Every structure is written in C-alpha cells, then in structure tokens.
Amino acid sequence: MTASFSSGEDSAALVSNRAVVWSPDYLSYRWSADHPMNPTRLELTMSLARSLGILEGVELLRPEAASDADLLRIHTPAYVEAVKQAGHSATSGVLGADAPHGLGTEDNPVFPQMHEASAILAGGSLAAAQEIAAGRTRRAVSIGGGMHHAMPDWASGFCVYNDVAIAVSWLLDNGFDRIAYIDVDAHHGDGVQHAFAHDPRVLTISLHQHPATLWPNTGWSSEVGEGAAEGTAVNLPVLPGTVDALWLRGFHAVVPGALAAFRPQIVISQCGVDSHREDPLADLALTVDGQRAAFLAMRDLADRYAEGRWLAVGGGGYGLVRVVPRAWTHLIAAALDREIDTARAVPADWQERAHALAPSVDLPDTMGDGGEVDYLSWDGPGGTPETGVPSVDRALTRIDSAVIATRRACFPLLGLDPEDPRD
Ligand SMILES: [Zn+2]
Image (cartoon, rainbow, N blue to C red; front, side, top):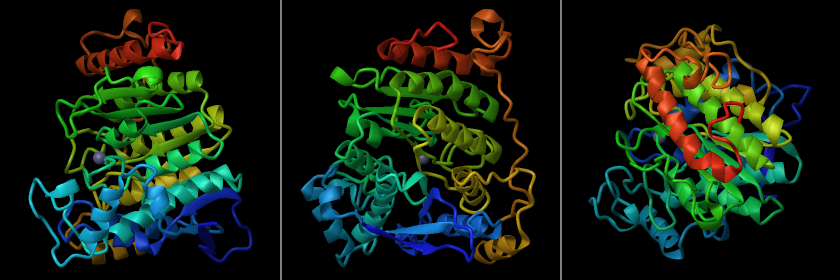
C-alpha cells in the first residue's frame, strides 16, 4: 500500500468502488504567487464539492509521493536529480529561457520543494491506478494530476512529472496491456503521446485547440503513432472559438469508435478545463455544461468498453474561481454517480469562501453557464456531410473537416471505415 484512507465526511453509509484521491499537500504545487496555475483552484474545487454534499460518505484516498523508482519509469535520472536540486537551491524563480531541463523558464520557474510537490501529484495518479488494478475500486479521480506536458528530461507547460505516463507505465507492468487515454485539455497531450508513441498497448486520444493556433503546436491529425503503434495515437485539433455542441459532435465522431476498436481494459481521462470560453490561456469556447457532458461521456465509455474502470485526473484550467471549481466538482460528481444539475445554485457558504479569497471576482450563481450541449450526431439522420449538413454553417463544416481528417488518418489503422458514420 502506498496510500491511506481517511473518512471525508461523517456518514454511516460509505461509498464503495469509487475513490477520490486527495492530499492537502497538492496545494504545495505552487509555481509562484502570480503564476496562472494556482492551487487555489484545487482548494476551491474540494470546498465546493464538500459544500454540495457530494463527498458525503466518501473515503478520501491520501497518496504518498511517487518513489524515485516510479518517477524513473518515465523520467531520466539526470532530470529527477535536477528537479530535487532546483527545489532545494537558494535561487528560485525565472532563470532564463535556456535553463537546463526547462527548470527556471517563464512557464516553469523554480520553486521551493518542487520535487516533493510534484512527486505527490504523481503519487496521487499512481495510487488511483493501483486501487483500480487491485480491484479495490472501479473509478478513481485525482484532480491534482494531469501534468500531461512533462517530458522525460525536461519540465514543460507547468508540468514537472508526468503523472499519467507514470501510472500507465505501472499498469503496463501490472497486468494491463490495452490502456486508453483521452485528453480533453485545450492543449495537446504531447507528453503522454510522446511516452507511448511507439507502444501499441496504449491508445492516446487528444482533442485540443489547433496546433497552428496554440502551444505546444503539436497534435496534428497526421500524428498517428509510430512503427507497430501506428493508429494508437489519435489527434483531433479543433479551431479557436469551438463551442460545446460542435466540440461534442467531434468527440463523439472519433472517440467511441476508436475505443470500440481498441477494446481497452481501462480508460484514463485527462480533464483539463482550459477549454472554457473564459480561460485566459486558450481560445476554445466551451461552457461548464459542455465540460460536464464530456466527463459524463468519458465515464460512460469506460462503463461500456472497459468494465467501468475509469481513472480521471485534472490538468489545465486557469479560470481559478469561476470555472475550475464548478467543472471539477462535476467531474468528481460524475465519478461518484452523484451528478449535479447545471441549474443548481452555487451554495452561499462556498461563495463566501471564494469571495474572501478573490474579492474582485464576479462569482457564478449556478453550477452551469447555460451552455447548449445538444449536438448533431455524426451517425444521426442528416448528421454527416454527405447527407445534408447545410454548407452555409461554416463552423459545422470546419469541425467536420477536422473530424474527417482524423478519421481518415487513424481509423483504417484501427480496422475501422472512416467513411462509415456508424464506425
Ligand atoms: Zn492546457
């Protein structure tokens, strides 16, 4: 055991088969006072979830830090050593664009104890994977994880250790040989794709803002995996401004088909919420309603194709007060089968707490944004370009072009027909 349970709330009836992974130490992953990735977002998520009662009877799984041996599954010894030294050096902050191992750039400034803070996030995703692998739980969620940009030898895009890649590597050594990873962050899941681009046992799917318009400028539909793993990297780039209904149309035109063909034993979701229309670092136009719909869809796909095994982690998301807490509360609620209606009022006690932390922020009143999540299905009547989507709807035409490119790149390699809407 690398983790211990504690009761989240007083309740006689404990929730079984569902794990929420949480450590107060997650809040020590703090780059700098004015860095966009501020752990306040995690704190406000947990407090909103508690306030709404969805953690009642749920045992919180408190992880330990990932060991060096586990970090070395993905990262180089020189990098892990450099992270340790950086976090214990006298110098912190920005050292320059060419700082060794990416430690000390604008995106990834050196901060005290950065190894310890990063290793606990990795330990959280690993503990979640281990609980599922041992059969102690079917679903586990750790909102501190999802550091999908971290590379073997360098920090990247606010990510130090690639917790998901570490968890996947552990699963591969412990009985799993078909693992599906779905990444819905606004940014391409480049670090996880890189880690398994040559491994046919891992299917990585990423939906993200188009690489011509957003860092890290990868995730083109032509990136399909390499060698024996061709077809097991799937990328659906979508244009800036993509709204819920079009994003969901794209998701459902690509992801279920790929999962059906791959037949995963577990689904791992990176649930970055910087796809929100208010996010300061990206340009997609989803609402909390659309993000919630995506979480529910991934949960249901895990139920359908992976016997319910679902590991969900966080990721990006820089609407620290108005967006992330509501979105990830919906994520936790989805994992616990305690869905919260988007019309439900945001509790007043949470608003007071949020106001104390961020007095200038106009707080949301309800758990949704009134987003439109009904979408035209790819395989429904009138749903495909061939059967009559009006060509005047240029936004629809654009998402359909992206879908067609992705399906043509990957589906034949997965044994699917890109032109058959039922696939
Ligand atoms: Zn992101």
